[in-house]
Length: 339
Image 1 (cartoon, helix red, strand yellow):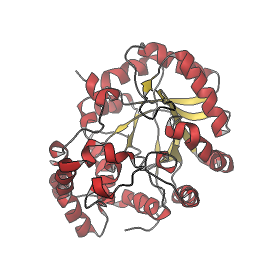
Image 2 (cartoon, rainbow, N blue to C red):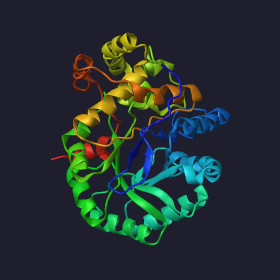
Image 3 (cartoon, rainbow, N blue to C red):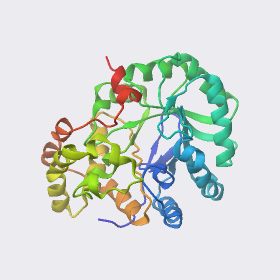
Image 4 (cartoon, rainbow, N blue to C red):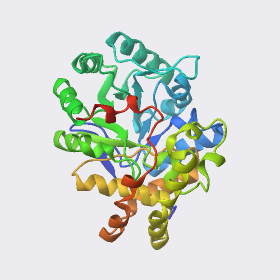
C-alpha cells in the first residue's frame, strides 16, 4: 500500500492552524542519521506537499542550524501552503558530547531571532520549547514565549517532552497548541499523564519517532551492525547488542498484521498511533521522518488503514516488553519528572 494519499486535515489546538493529519519530521535531512542525498531530500519535501503534508518540523539544534537553512528555500517557495514548526531549548557546541537545556528568556530571545534569520521568515507558525529545564520556572519560560506571540514573531506555542502537570501549568499561562513527545508501539510513557492532559485541554499531540527511529519499519536484521558509523542510533540502547535482538523479535505481530493487510510494518505502526489517539479523544499529527519520496508516500498511505480490535490486541503488549530506554540519558525527558 504505497500510493499517494491526499491527507485529511486536523486542527493544531483550539483555534490553531489546520494541517494534514500527518506531518514530516525533517531532522534526518541534516543530522543524526548519516550522510544525506540532498537532491532526494528536496524531492521528499515536494512529495510531502503533494500528498497533503503541511506541517514541517525542524529545530535549531538539528545540524546546529543547518536543517533550518536547508528548509529555507522550500519554505520561501511555499510559505502560504505550509505550517512551519521549529524549536529552541537544546544547546550544542563544537564538542559533540555537549548538550545543555536552556529555557531562560534571554536565551530564547537569541534563539528565535537566529531561527527567523536561518529560515528566512518573519514569523514562525509553531514554536516549541524543545526540552524542559526544571531550574527555570515554567511560567517564566512560557510567559516569555507568549511575548513572542504578542510581538508577531510566533503564531502558536508548543512544548516537547513535558508531563501532564507541566502542560496544564503552561496552558494556564498561554494557550498551548501542540505537545510533541515520543509516542509509538515501542514508547508509551506519555500515556501516563501527558496524553490525558492534552485531550482535556484540547492540545494536539504531535508524536515524534512514531516509527521507533526506524526500528518499527522492520528494516534491520541486526540494527547495531547495519547502521553507518555516522548514525546516532548505533549508540541508542534499543538498537544495541542483546536489546536489538529482543526488540527485533517483538516485531512478529507487526509483520503478521502487515501481511494480512498488504501493508508494510511501518504503516501498521503509524496506523496504531492514529487509532491509539482516538481511544483518548485526542487530535494527533505524527511526524515520521524520511529522506526518500517513496517512504513518504508509504507513510502517508498509512492514514487509510484501520486496524481491527483483534489486531490492536496483538499489538498491545509490545511496549511493555521493549528492551532498553529511549535514550542513553533519560534525564532530558519527561519520564524523570512524572509523579
